[in-house]
Image 1 (cartoon, chains in turn orange, green):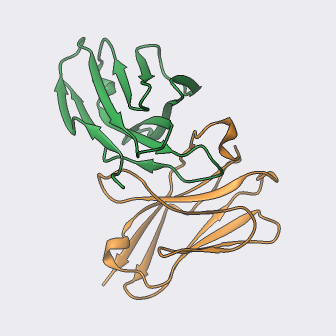
Image 2 (image 1 turned 90 degrees about the vertical axis):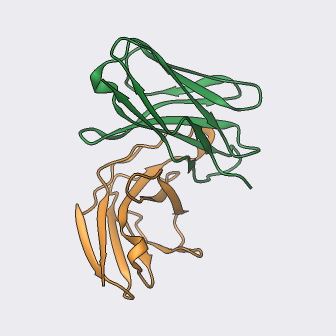
Length: 112
Length: 113
C-alpha cells in the first residue's frame, strides 16, 4: 500500500472549517484514500473514503486532486468534539484483505 | 445495528501469563482484524481473519495468535506475556463486499505487571 504524509499537528477555531491535507504521491490506480480519526482512548472511527471523485457524507468532505497524489479532508464546521488524531490511509480494494497501515496522523486541536 | 464489541475492556496480567481477548463484529461482517496500539509504536496491524482463516498477518512474534469462529466472532491470544505487551488492543470488523471502511471497537486495555 502507498505511503502517506500528513502534518503532525494543526489547530482550528471552533466553527471554522478544518482542512487536513495528506500526500500520497505513490498511490496506484486501484488504491483508495481512507480517513479515520481517533478521539483520545477510543477506537478509530471511519470517516470517509474515495477513489478519484470528491466525496461527501454527514461527517466530512474528501477532495482528491486530479492526479490523485494528494487529498484534503474537510470538516466544514469544526466543533470541540472534533479534536482528535486524523489518519489518512491508502490501500487497495478489500479483495486482498482489510489490513490498514496507520502512520502518525495529524493531531487536530479545535480551540474555542 | 450494534457496533463492534470487545471484552474485557480492561485487564491486568502478570509477566509470563497468557491472555485471551474477544471481539464480536458487526452483524454480517465476516472480516475481523486486530491491532495493537502503544505510545511508542502507534497503531500496528496484528492479523486479519476472514471465514475462519487468517488472511493477513503483521510483523509480530508467534506469541500472538488468533482465531475466528463460524459466527465471525474472533479471539486473540497472547502467551508468555511481557511488559512490552501492555497496550490497547483494537478489533475492527469489515464487510467484504466492495471497498468499505473498517469499524473499530473500543479496545481492550491490557496492562502487564
